[in-house]
Structure formats: C-alpha cells, structure tokens
Amino acid sequence: MTSRLSRTFVFVGLCLVGVSTVYPLIFMALNTMRSTTAFELSPYGLPTHLNLASFRTLFSQVPFLSSILHSFIVVVPAVVLATLFSALAAFVFTKTPVRFGNVLFWVMLMIMFMPGIVVLLPLYVEVAHLGLADNFTPAILIYTAINIPYGTYLLRSNFRAIPDSIVEASRVDGASWSRIFVRIILPVAKPGIVTVGILTFLNIWNELFISLVLLHSPSDEMVTPTLAQLSGKFSTDIPVLMAGLLLGAIPTLVLYFVTARVFIRGMLSGAVR
Amino acid sequence: MAANTSEEISRPAAGAREVSRRRRERRFFPYLALIPAAVFVLVLMVLPIGATIYHSFTNWDGLTSTFIGWRNFSLLLRNPIVSQIFLNSVIFLISVPLILFASLVAAVLVYEKVLGWRLFRFLFFIPNVLSPVIIGVLFSTFFLPGGLADQPLRTVGLGSFAWLSYPWTARLVVILALVWSSFGFGMVVVLSAMATIDPALYDAAIIDGTTWWRRLWFITIPLISSTLQFLSVINVIYTFTSLFSFVFVITAGGPGFATTTVDYYTYLTTFENGQFGYGAALAVLLFLIVLVLTIAQIKLFPQREVQQGA
Image (cartoon, rainbow over all chains, first blue to last red; front, side, top):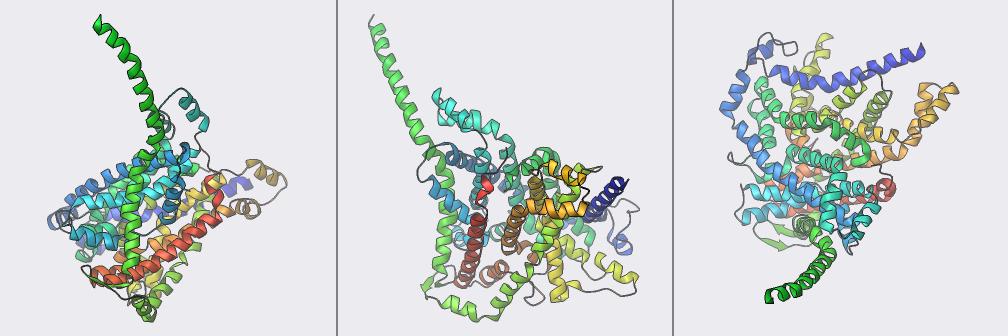
C-alpha cells in the first residue's frame, strides 16, 4: 500500500518534470499555427484553426531553408571527418604500441574543453587574409578540428573495453592494422562510434559562435546565426519566430527520435564520461 | 620453359615483397592513422592557441601587430567592465548546484522504473539536443513583458514585469535556460552511475525497514558522490565556455554588462570593435581558467576511464 502510494508520488514527480520539459516545445509548435493577432489574443490554449501564414512570412522574409541547407553542407562532412579521425586516433592510442602517442593524447585532454573563441581569433584573421571568408571549407575544417579531442577521448575509453586478446589473436594470424581496425574495432565499437557521431552532429549543428563569425553573407549563413537574428526581426511577431525555431530544431529532433535507442544506451554505458 | 622459370623465380620474390610490405604496414600504420587527428589538432587548435597567446602581448588590429608587453593585461585589470564580467561568471555558477539538483531528481525518479519511465527518460533528454539559440529565444519569449512568466503575476493582480531589464532577473532567465538545457545530460550521467550500484544494498535496506529518503541519502548519494563531483566540475567548465549563445540571444549581455560573460565580451571587443590584441588577452584569461579547471577535472577523476563498462 505504501509502496503503491510512493510509486504514485514518483509518477507525479516524473509528470511534473516531464511537463516542464515538454511544455516549451508544445508552446513553440502550437504557436507556429496561429496568426499574429490570434497569438496576441490567446497564446496558450489550443489554436482554433490552422494558420500557416507564419511559415509563409518566414520564407518570404528570410532565406531560411537555404540556411538549413548551409548547415547540412558544413555539419555532415565535419561530423564524418571528426568521427573517423577520432576513431583512428583512439584505435592507435589503445591498441597499437606507438611512442609519442601519449603526448598527443595529453595535448588533446588539455584542450578538449577549450571554447571556440580561444582558437578563432587568429584563425578568423588567417581565413580573411587567405580570401576564404564566406567559404564553407574553413568552417568544415575548424569544426572537424575542434571536435577531435573530445571524440578521441570518448572513443579511447570505448575502445579500451574491447579485449586486447581479440586484437592479439588477429595479429598472430597476420592481420594488418588497417584490417583489424575495419574488421574488428569498427563493428565491435559501432554503438560507441555512432553515439560519438551523434554527439558531434549535435555539437556542430547547435553551435553559434564559429558559424556567426565565419559565415555571415546570405549565400552561406548557417541556421543558428539565422535563428539568433530572427528574434530581433520578429520580436513582435512571435508565431513567425516560433516557426523558425521549430524548423531549426527539426533536424536534431529527428536525429534524436530516430537514434534514441542506440544513443541513450551509448550514453548510459558511459560513452559520455 | 623460359617463362616457367621466370615465374618460379618471381613468385618467392613477390612473396618476400608482400612480407616486407606487411611488415612496413605493421610498423607505420599506427603513425599514418594518427596523422589526420594530429595535423587537425596541431594546425587548427594548438597553433592558433599559441598565436592567441602571442598576440595578447601585442597591439593587434587584425592586420598589423606591435609588441607591447603586458599592457593589454594591465589595461584589463583596470577595466571595471572586466571585473564585472568575471563577477558575472561567478554568479552564473549558481546554475551548477541547480543543474546537479535537477539531474539528481530526474535520475532518482526515472530509476524507480514506474509506469512510463523509458518515455520520461527519453523526454528529459530532449532539451539537450536543442541548440542554446533555440532555447534562448524560446525562454526570452516567455520572459517578455506580458509573456508566460507574467501569467502568475497577473492572476494575483500584479501587472507585467520586464524580467530582462533588471540585472538579477535577467541573470535568472539565463540561469534557468542553462539549467533547462543541461539537466538531461546530468540525469544520464547520474543514471549510468546508479546502474553500477548493487541492488542487493537496496533490498537489504528495505528489509531493515529504512525509508525511501534514508536510502537515497545514505546509499545512493554516497555511492555516486564521485559522479556528482565530476558533474559539478564539468558544469563549472560549461558556465565559462557555453553561455555565449544564451547571452547572445536572451540579453545581448545586458542590462548594461550585467549578463556579459568572458567569451561574449571577447566577441564584442574583437569582432565588433576590432581590438584584436585586447581580445586575445581576454581569450588568454579564458584559456587559463578552462585549462586549470580541465586539469582539476583530470586530477580529481583519473579513474573515470578505467571503470567504463562496454
């Protein structure tokens, strides 16, 4: 009886936290469907009729869809490169006898939490000097670099859990390192690698500073700077603002919804520490 | 006949070449595999950090720089705005215990495995996958005069309140946004620590008739204390490194400089005012703070990597 009572309390607690987590998102989603005047009359209830004028206004005044495209152009290659290079480095650090490897790993540990601004001042000047301002390539390369230390750190502890005996056995059978990496490490560590890939995607997609500084012409602006400037443009037109936020959130939300099973398990198994 | 002999001779030679190729692969592959990560980290992180440190001792406008010794730093120390922004960072540390508390509450509730616990665990992590830009804009909408935050004030007859126009309430909004965005991650970390607790401990405690609160206080919290410390240090680092987006969209550093953080002020001095040398000196201070915190985190939790489960 007491246990049923306390379980009810726990459930109520979960619901309270759940509502405070989900309500802002529902507010965002519902208000994209309201007209501006309907929002001012009643912003909180269910919308009485579906009005998609907010999206039309957004698309006609801001090159919003192309900013989402620009984000994909930058984020996808950076995620692939950063995850691949981190996995290779983590493999070398954990399974091969490389001297100096520790020095590099130590350097990565020291700078893994460095905020972008510390590296971006000279890089910005250099990029402008080389005439590469408003070019996607520097952004891709910088995002790749910035995400390698943490990715390597996470994958290193992940690969450590793979028994050395498997690697030793294939070595005795004459397998090359590249074969061991492709045929053993990648398949065995797949959940960890996928988790790190997702984390890297979230990091880069959601980041504001680097995208703001490096890419700021309409032909290359990424989605976060576009969103950040929306609030100035539409401070009195909340439905348009919410339409932008919703569209900007959809890629990461879809990624999370689709991969939640692997991703949450990967995080719980200590992939994040 | 002739072709036959040459084949017989070349076969072992090709075999030897194959063996030596393999040997070379064995020796050099690890170095080759390290090259991409090493080049990226050295060229695009270590070198730029070095350049930032060098330029912090110069008068730099992005084009030319002259060496001026410690002048940027002595100017920094005398700038009242700089002491204000460091004070702000200390104030924003209030978010750390709040994040820890919210993470612990969420984790403890999910751990009870009542109806729908997987769904709740899934939901609680959603804010973590959203950009701080989105969260920031959303929260600033709630705290506009007449926004969602004013609803309770209205029902008791008080009018609307300009939350973002006063230093402490503006800071409160930034802190709330930060806590909302990061408690899901904390929950996952706490849950992964709780998964290592032997359930027999709880069973024994239940047989002894202890209350739920006493089990939480005397079993759960002591056993995950190193994880809680780890979370605190990580979140202290985050308050120094990841408030830029929140501040940029919620308050733009205001009112005055009440919510300006080190990275936001560095952004203003360099990219808005073009004082790159001065900005570099600020970035160096931020670098040192984060470096010290990172070293503290590694020294305090060296066992972290060893206790990983697969």
